[in-house]
Each structure stands twice: as structure tokens, then as C-alpha cells.
Image (cartoon, rainbow, N blue to C red; front, side, top):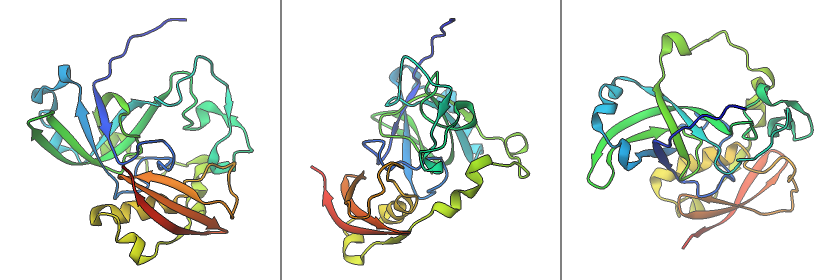
Length: 229
């Protein structure tokens, strides 16, 4: 088998210290805010010349928490309840031969910083904090957008949204700029497909807080919030 070297050009700075709760696709929670920080050898502003002319970008990255030495031709997508097997190349499962991820994110700004050189602020990313990024490409509407496209089993994704009951006194414990993002993340049901017990209280680490919640039928209720650290 031929091997190809690939370099990490950047890493993601996001509100997710672990993979639990990360939206299963990019763009599902537009309120999420993240920053692309380039590795020292790639901190050259010339490499980003003209990027501000695009509204969206493609990120090519690694499922760094799902790297395996072997692979399976079929996987069990959470969207199908974790019980139905699909071909790995018919899904976006992280358990792939090369553990590569692809995300479309909104470019919110380009900033020159003293500590990290030029960084990119993006919205709607589905990457864990520290995720290695291999490449960045502009999203080009005339070639990348296909309004007539079909989405296979994912076309029913909206049917899985939860109602979120987030008591105001708990919601206000989060920074104002993180509140709507947290609600959006919770509405997409962070629970693993094999853990759906109504009596269980789950914990989501997000933006420096542990959000504890339970789910009964189609309603998620936040029980408590604790600041981490």
C-alpha cells in the first residue's frame, strides 16, 4: 500500500475539549465560534491573501480521536440509531481508512495577532479543540453548491431535533455570546445512539462549562451548569 506524507498546517481552537456533543456536521449550529491557528512554519500572511473575499471555506482535517490501524467497510451511523450498517463511503463516519474530515465553515474574519500571526475566525465548525487541519480551500458557490442534491438517509435529519428546556437562571450562567450556541448544540441531541436512558444525566463540556442534562422523549432539560477548573 502506498503511503503519502501530509503536513498539519493549522489547529482548531474551539469550545469542545472532547468529541462528546460536537455537532455531527458542520453548519448545523451557526452560532458556534472557532479560530483556525496556523502552525509556526505556515504563519505567512501571503498564504491568505484574498481569502477575505470568500464567505465560506472548506477545512480538510483529521479525526484525531478516531485514528485506527484497521478499517471496516461498514459503519453504524448514529442518525440511524446505531443499529443499521451502511457502507463507510456512504457516510461521514470518523472511522475511515484515512480518518479525514471535511467541513464547510463560514469565514467571520481574518485577524492579525501578536501571538499567532494571522488567524481565521469561523462559524459553524464541527471540530474539537486542537484538531489538526491539513488544508483550507475556498468554498466556491458556482461549483460547490448543488440545490438539487439528495442527502440519502440524512434527509430526515431535521426530524431528530430536540426541544431544549434551558431554565433562564442556568442559561445566564453562560457567557452571553455562548448561550445560543449551547442551545443549538443541545438541540441536536449529543447523546450516543446506544445511550438513550431517560433517567440518565449526561454532562457536556462546552466553553469551559459542564452542562448537565437529561432527555425524556423529544425534550432535553438542562439540570445544572458547573464552571470547569
